[in-house]
Length: 208
Image 1 (cartoon, one colour):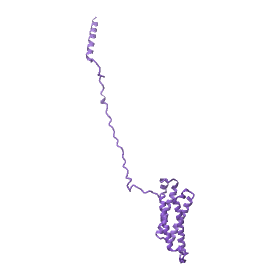
Image 2 (cartoon, rainbow, N blue to C red; image 1 turned 120 degrees about the vertical axis):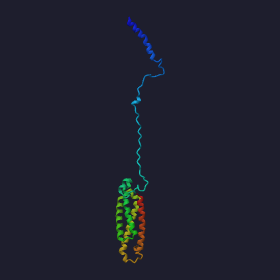
Image 3 (cartoon, rainbow, N blue to C red; image 1 turned 180 degrees about the vertical axis):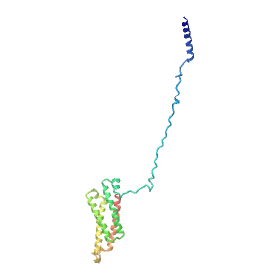
Image 4 (tube, rainbow, N blue to C red; image 1 turned 90 degrees about the vertical axis):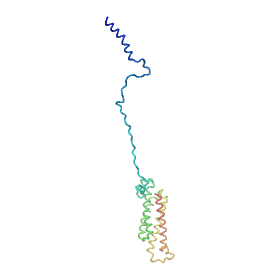
């Protein structure tokens, strides 16, 4: 009986104790417990700034950086210029330019007949090969092709004239029949040939 009275007393006092520590209302207060401190283990990762690599290019407008175009190099003509079907033709044209320039210089320097004729002979042989190579191709209609053929015939006739003049000069009185072998006439004909060579060289260079 005594135990029952003690239990009854405890039951009557517990609600009072619990109500004393509990707030009247939780409205508007959200979570009322204690949250862990997350900032202790959190360290912000610093943002890495990358600097773009800048390669300073050379001044390509500088004369020291610009190299001349190697037009006399067959590999450049055939591969870099990419002139397709006419690439080999352009390469063949380029081979005539130094040859014609040397004949021009021989006329300018008034070189002897033997040297002049030897150089013209080599030019004519090259022109004959050139003609056989392109006579049945579209390139035969090019101005450069026709001009080379005309120049070859003219140079051949002048070389023959000079050769005959050397042979017959001691026996000629330079009358009406011998006028073509007159030194003045030969000089005049060489002047015409020099002009024609100069014009042909210009045409060949413009064809590149």
